[in-house]
Length: 196
Length: 251
Image (spheres, rainbow over the protein chains, first blue to last red):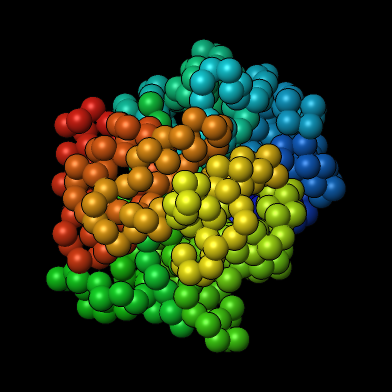
């Protein structure tokens, strides 16, 4: 059963709707004790990474999240939170995955936000089980996670190569929105819920 | 590479879709949820719902519809029509809408764009602009093109980008309903000026028009209503055609 960190950073209706469609059970994590109730944890998030970090601090859950040994999945800003630092609000983040979150540079001749469906190139990883190379996922973001071959499990290109998904130990993050990415996105959520 | 998006637009009145939709295998053509699911199935990249309800009860009905759509739909969707304040937008966000589109409320109160962007992020705020060519200038119009404003389209869009609009939905009233093609000239001009995504709207009549607008104006997305609703253009065919013309699409 999946526990969703409930820290007020953005709307989670679409995420819970996707889990409902997949018949994956879930509940909300409000306290440290709640973290024990679930086998898998999702950190959702939209909006401003710095502001999201402040909200997460407000829950008092940070140390407990960092110590988790069960599968954890950060989505969009939730993924950025598990990195070291974001240029958005010059914010120090959870530092679970030693990579940085940077702003897209419009001098690369790209529009910002990066909005829409883009091809993803997964490596051989359980989270992307059954997902072919070049499958498209739905992205909406102005900040990206720098590509690092050690932690990257799926890359994408938008002006430059960046990480569409990362992993370190039991911590996973996806920059795209699986709950809005059609069947491929549902596959990711299903795969996550099946991780040991 | 980022795909060019194809966006069907649905008019909604009192929680029901209107404009004789003509899909053969729909049980209920007025049910926004069934129609949305059908479009998602066909490969639409995104949907826009435009609320044209005039009654006071509209907000409640719309929220319920948005929730039902969000429960079923696995692609993003935008809600437009009658959004005048932060509370309207927040209710739609909490009901599962990915973006909201604002039009006349932003013209009357441009600060609304800024407030919405600050509260919910620029990615949530689509500025819809209805434009018409009058005396040699592109002028912003309201009320579906019936009411001219003092705003010049190019200036207004630039201002909106500066205020925090995350995307522009530009409808040419001169082309809308003509089925003679998008206003590629204006779209190209506006696209050159801004650094946020732009959706072309108004004038789609056949598949070549989509190829043309992506090739000539390099817009990020193209929106249409009747050609999709009446089955004149099927989305899978359109995507194949665009792909043949080397336009990046999601198949």
